[in-house]
Length: 286
Image: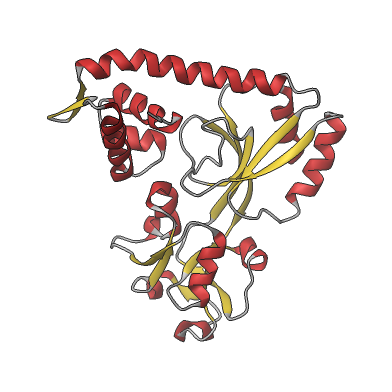
Protein backbone atom coordinates (compact mmCIF):
# COMPACT_ATOMS: atom_id res chain seq x y z
CA UNK A 1 0.00 0.00 0.00
CA UNK A 2 1.51 3.32 -1.13
CA UNK A 3 0.10 6.22 0.88
CA UNK A 4 1.62 9.61 0.13
CA UNK A 5 2.44 12.33 2.64
CA UNK A 6 0.06 14.72 0.88
CA UNK A 7 -2.84 12.31 1.46
CA UNK A 8 -1.95 12.09 5.16
CA UNK A 9 -1.72 15.87 5.33
CA UNK A 10 -5.17 16.15 3.75
CA UNK A 11 -6.58 13.59 6.18
CA UNK A 12 -5.17 15.42 9.21
CA UNK A 13 -6.56 18.77 8.03
CA UNK A 14 -10.07 17.37 7.54
CA UNK A 15 -9.87 15.54 10.88
CA UNK A 16 -8.89 18.75 12.68
CA UNK A 17 -11.44 20.97 10.95
CA UNK A 18 -14.23 18.33 10.74
CA UNK A 19 -15.40 20.29 7.72
CA UNK A 20 -14.18 19.70 4.17
CA UNK A 21 -14.73 23.30 3.06
CA UNK A 22 -12.68 24.74 5.93
CA UNK A 23 -9.99 22.13 5.43
CA UNK A 24 -9.81 22.93 1.71
CA UNK A 25 -9.41 26.64 2.49
CA UNK A 26 -6.68 25.83 5.01
CA UNK A 27 -4.84 23.62 2.51
CA UNK A 28 -5.43 26.04 -0.35
CA UNK A 29 -6.99 23.38 -2.59
CA UNK A 30 -10.45 23.09 -4.08
CA UNK A 31 -13.11 21.23 -2.09
CA UNK A 32 -13.75 18.66 -4.87
CA UNK A 33 -10.02 17.91 -5.12
CA UNK A 34 -9.75 17.42 -1.36
CA UNK A 35 -12.84 15.19 -1.20
CA UNK A 36 -11.46 13.10 -4.06
CA UNK A 37 -8.11 12.58 -2.33
CA UNK A 38 -9.80 11.56 0.92
CA UNK A 39 -11.86 8.98 -0.98
CA UNK A 40 -8.69 7.70 -2.66
CA UNK A 41 -7.04 7.28 0.74
CA UNK A 42 -10.10 5.47 2.13
CA UNK A 43 -10.06 3.05 -0.82
CA UNK A 44 -6.36 2.38 -0.29
CA UNK A 45 -6.89 1.71 3.41
CA UNK A 46 -10.01 -0.37 2.93
CA UNK A 47 -12.09 1.49 5.51
CA UNK A 48 -13.89 4.80 5.97
CA UNK A 49 -12.14 7.61 7.80
CA UNK A 50 -15.13 9.92 8.11
CA UNK A 51 -18.88 9.78 8.46
CA UNK A 52 -20.80 12.53 6.73
CA UNK A 53 -22.93 14.43 9.26
CA UNK A 54 -24.95 17.63 9.24
CA UNK A 55 -22.59 20.59 8.93
CA UNK A 56 -19.48 18.58 8.19
CA UNK A 57 -17.88 15.23 8.94
CA UNK A 58 -17.07 13.09 11.98
CA UNK A 59 -14.18 10.70 12.44
CA UNK A 60 -14.99 7.01 12.35
CA UNK A 61 -13.38 4.78 14.99
CA UNK A 62 -10.75 3.81 12.43
CA UNK A 63 -10.15 7.44 11.54
CA UNK A 64 -9.74 8.44 15.18
CA UNK A 65 -7.24 5.60 15.67
CA UNK A 66 -5.25 6.64 12.60
CA UNK A 67 -5.11 10.38 13.34
CA UNK A 68 -2.32 10.39 15.99
CA UNK A 69 -0.25 8.05 13.82
CA UNK A 70 -0.64 10.33 10.79
CA UNK A 71 0.32 13.37 12.88
CA UNK A 72 3.40 11.56 14.20
CA UNK A 73 4.48 10.45 10.72
CA UNK A 74 4.15 13.97 9.30
CA UNK A 75 6.04 15.43 12.25
CA UNK A 76 8.82 12.85 11.98
CA UNK A 77 9.12 13.42 8.23
CA UNK A 78 9.44 17.20 8.65
CA UNK A 79 12.02 16.72 11.38
CA UNK A 80 13.91 14.24 9.25
CA UNK A 81 14.03 16.59 6.27
CA UNK A 82 15.43 19.38 8.43
CA UNK A 83 18.03 17.07 9.99
CA UNK A 84 19.06 15.76 6.56
CA UNK A 85 19.57 19.27 5.27
CA UNK A 86 21.51 20.27 8.35
CA UNK A 87 23.81 17.25 7.83
CA UNK A 88 24.93 18.42 4.41
CA UNK A 89 28.68 19.21 4.35
CA UNK A 90 27.94 22.28 2.27
CA UNK A 91 24.51 23.80 2.59
CA UNK A 92 22.00 24.02 -0.24
CA UNK A 93 19.04 26.39 -0.14
CA UNK A 94 16.17 25.02 -2.25
CA UNK A 95 14.19 27.78 -3.97
CA UNK A 96 10.81 26.88 -5.40
CA UNK A 97 9.23 28.64 -8.36
CA UNK A 98 6.27 28.04 -10.64
CA UNK A 99 7.11 30.50 -13.41
CA UNK A 100 10.15 32.47 -14.46
CA UNK A 101 10.90 35.25 -11.96
CA UNK A 102 13.02 37.71 -13.95
CA UNK A 103 12.67 41.38 -13.03
CA UNK A 104 16.31 41.43 -11.93
CA UNK A 105 15.38 39.92 -8.57
CA UNK A 106 17.36 36.69 -8.47
CA UNK A 107 20.87 37.65 -9.52
CA UNK A 108 21.39 40.34 -6.91
CA UNK A 109 19.72 38.22 -4.22
CA UNK A 110 22.01 35.28 -5.01
CA UNK A 111 25.08 37.52 -4.77
CA UNK A 112 24.02 38.91 -1.39
CA UNK A 113 23.07 35.46 -0.09
CA UNK A 114 26.44 33.93 -1.00
CA UNK A 115 28.28 36.87 0.58
CA UNK A 116 26.39 36.31 3.82
CA UNK A 117 26.42 32.48 3.73
CA UNK A 118 29.80 31.50 2.21
CA UNK A 119 29.95 27.88 1.09
CA UNK A 120 26.20 27.65 0.58
CA UNK A 121 24.66 26.85 -2.79
CA UNK A 122 21.21 27.52 -4.20
CA UNK A 123 19.10 24.98 -6.05
CA UNK A 124 16.13 26.06 -8.17
CA UNK A 125 13.13 23.73 -8.05
CA UNK A 126 10.26 23.93 -10.53
CA UNK A 127 6.96 23.26 -8.72
CA UNK A 128 3.59 22.59 -10.34
CA UNK A 129 0.64 24.91 -9.91
CA UNK A 130 -1.17 22.23 -7.91
CA UNK A 131 0.98 23.44 -4.99
CA UNK A 132 0.41 27.21 -4.63
CA UNK A 133 3.02 27.33 -1.85
CA UNK A 134 5.80 26.61 -4.35
CA UNK A 135 6.81 23.51 -2.41
CA UNK A 136 7.27 25.33 0.91
CA UNK A 137 4.24 23.75 2.60
CA UNK A 138 5.52 20.18 2.29
CA UNK A 139 9.16 21.05 2.99
CA UNK A 140 10.37 20.39 -0.56
CA UNK A 141 11.44 24.03 -0.88
CA UNK A 142 13.05 26.22 1.77
CA UNK A 143 11.68 29.41 0.20
CA UNK A 144 9.68 30.06 -2.95
CA UNK A 145 8.79 32.82 -5.35
CA UNK A 146 4.97 32.80 -5.40
CA UNK A 147 2.07 34.87 -6.62
CA UNK A 148 -0.51 35.79 -4.00
CA UNK A 149 -2.79 34.50 -2.62
CA UNK A 150 -0.90 31.75 -0.76
CA UNK A 151 -1.96 29.05 1.73
CA UNK A 152 -2.02 29.51 5.48
CA UNK A 153 1.11 28.73 7.43
CA UNK A 154 3.46 30.85 5.32
CA UNK A 155 5.27 34.10 5.91
CA UNK A 156 5.53 36.34 2.86
CA UNK A 157 7.44 39.41 1.78
CA UNK A 158 5.95 41.15 -1.26
CA UNK A 159 8.60 41.89 -3.87
CA UNK A 160 6.67 43.37 -6.78
CA UNK A 161 3.19 44.78 -7.32
CA UNK A 162 2.17 44.79 -10.98
CA UNK A 163 -0.87 45.40 -13.13
CA UNK A 164 -2.52 42.39 -14.67
CA UNK A 165 -3.01 42.32 -18.40
CA UNK A 166 -4.14 39.76 -20.95
CA UNK A 167 -2.21 37.62 -23.43
CA UNK A 168 -4.18 36.77 -26.55
CA UNK A 169 -3.65 35.67 -30.15
CA UNK A 170 -2.26 38.47 -32.30
CA UNK A 171 -5.30 38.25 -34.61
CA UNK A 172 -7.85 38.46 -31.78
CA UNK A 173 -10.56 41.11 -32.42
CA UNK A 174 -9.60 42.93 -29.18
CA UNK A 175 -5.87 42.97 -29.98
CA UNK A 176 -6.20 46.27 -31.86
CA UNK A 177 -6.99 48.11 -28.62
CA UNK A 178 -4.25 49.80 -26.62
CA UNK A 179 -5.88 48.61 -23.38
CA UNK A 180 -8.90 46.45 -22.67
CA UNK A 181 -11.54 46.79 -19.95
CA UNK A 182 -12.01 43.54 -18.07
CA UNK A 183 -15.72 43.66 -18.84
CA UNK A 184 -14.85 43.11 -22.52
CA UNK A 185 -13.16 39.81 -21.60
CA UNK A 186 -15.91 38.29 -19.48
CA UNK A 187 -17.30 36.08 -22.23
CA UNK A 188 -13.90 35.07 -23.60
CA UNK A 189 -12.68 31.49 -22.99
CA UNK A 190 -9.83 31.60 -20.47
CA UNK A 191 -6.81 29.35 -20.06
CA UNK A 192 -7.07 28.12 -16.45
CA UNK A 193 -4.68 26.66 -13.89
CA UNK A 194 -5.58 23.16 -12.62
CA UNK A 195 -8.43 22.97 -10.10
CA UNK A 196 -5.98 21.84 -7.42
CA UNK A 197 -4.52 25.38 -7.49
CA UNK A 198 -7.67 26.51 -5.62
CA UNK A 199 -7.86 30.28 -4.98
CA UNK A 200 -4.81 30.90 -7.17
CA UNK A 201 -6.72 29.47 -10.14
CA UNK A 202 -9.67 31.75 -9.27
CA UNK A 203 -7.38 34.78 -9.06
CA UNK A 204 -5.94 34.31 -12.55
CA UNK A 205 -9.45 33.78 -13.90
CA UNK A 206 -10.29 37.25 -12.56
CA UNK A 207 -12.91 36.04 -10.10
CA UNK A 208 -12.03 38.91 -7.78
CA UNK A 209 -13.40 41.30 -10.43
CA UNK A 210 -16.45 39.40 -11.68
CA UNK A 211 -19.79 38.19 -10.36
CA UNK A 212 -20.34 35.59 -13.07
CA UNK A 213 -18.77 32.24 -13.89
CA UNK A 214 -15.71 32.43 -16.14
CA UNK A 215 -15.63 30.45 -19.36
CA UNK A 216 -12.75 27.96 -19.24
CA UNK A 217 -11.43 27.08 -22.68
CA UNK A 218 -8.70 24.71 -21.51
CA UNK A 219 -6.80 23.80 -18.33
CA UNK A 220 -3.01 24.04 -18.49
CA UNK A 221 -0.44 22.68 -16.06
CA UNK A 222 2.70 24.58 -17.09
CA UNK A 223 3.53 28.02 -18.52
CA UNK A 224 4.49 26.36 -21.80
CA UNK A 225 1.05 24.73 -22.04
CA UNK A 226 -0.63 28.06 -21.24
CA UNK A 227 1.04 30.04 -24.00
CA UNK A 228 0.82 27.23 -26.52
CA UNK A 229 -2.94 27.22 -25.88
CA UNK A 230 -3.09 30.99 -26.38
CA UNK A 231 -1.18 30.96 -29.67
CA UNK A 232 -3.38 28.05 -30.82
CA UNK A 233 -6.46 30.23 -30.33
CA UNK A 234 -7.94 28.19 -27.48
CA UNK A 235 -8.40 31.16 -25.16
CA UNK A 236 -6.89 34.16 -23.43
CA UNK A 237 -5.01 34.34 -20.15
CA UNK A 238 -4.39 36.99 -17.51
CA UNK A 239 -0.70 37.75 -17.13
CA UNK A 240 1.27 39.95 -14.75
CA UNK A 241 2.83 42.92 -16.52
CA UNK A 242 6.39 41.76 -15.88
CA UNK A 243 5.66 38.30 -17.26
CA UNK A 244 4.57 39.72 -20.61
CA UNK A 245 8.23 40.19 -21.59
CA UNK A 246 9.41 36.93 -20.01
CA UNK A 247 6.86 34.88 -21.95
CA UNK A 248 6.73 36.75 -25.24
CA UNK A 249 5.77 34.43 -28.11
CA UNK A 250 5.33 34.86 -31.87
CA UNK A 251 1.66 35.15 -32.71
CA UNK A 252 0.72 36.41 -29.24
CA UNK A 253 0.25 39.94 -27.91
CA UNK A 254 -0.10 41.43 -24.44
CA UNK A 255 -2.53 44.23 -23.64
CA UNK A 256 -3.06 46.05 -20.31
CA UNK A 257 -6.44 45.41 -18.69
CA UNK A 258 -8.41 47.99 -16.71
CA UNK A 259 -10.78 47.13 -13.88
CA UNK A 260 -8.52 44.54 -12.21
CA UNK A 261 -6.65 44.84 -8.89
CA UNK A 262 -2.89 44.40 -9.34
CA UNK A 263 -1.01 41.14 -8.78
CA UNK A 264 1.65 40.64 -6.11
CA UNK A 265 4.81 38.55 -6.43
CA UNK A 266 6.32 37.52 -3.10
CA UNK A 267 8.96 35.37 -1.46
CA UNK A 268 7.42 32.84 0.94
CA UNK A 269 8.80 30.69 3.76
CA UNK A 270 7.27 28.58 6.53
CA UNK A 271 6.06 30.30 9.68
CA UNK A 272 8.39 29.51 12.53
CA UNK A 273 11.31 28.74 10.19
CA UNK A 274 14.17 30.67 11.77
CA UNK A 275 17.07 28.94 10.03
CA UNK A 276 19.84 31.42 9.21
CA UNK A 277 19.99 30.45 5.54
CA UNK A 278 16.29 31.23 5.08
CA UNK A 279 16.60 34.55 6.88
CA UNK A 280 19.70 35.40 4.80
CA UNK A 281 17.90 34.82 1.50
CA UNK A 282 14.78 36.75 2.53
CA UNK A 283 16.96 39.62 3.73
CA UNK A 284 18.83 39.55 0.41
CA UNK A 285 15.56 40.36 -1.31
CA UNK A 286 14.47 43.17 1.00
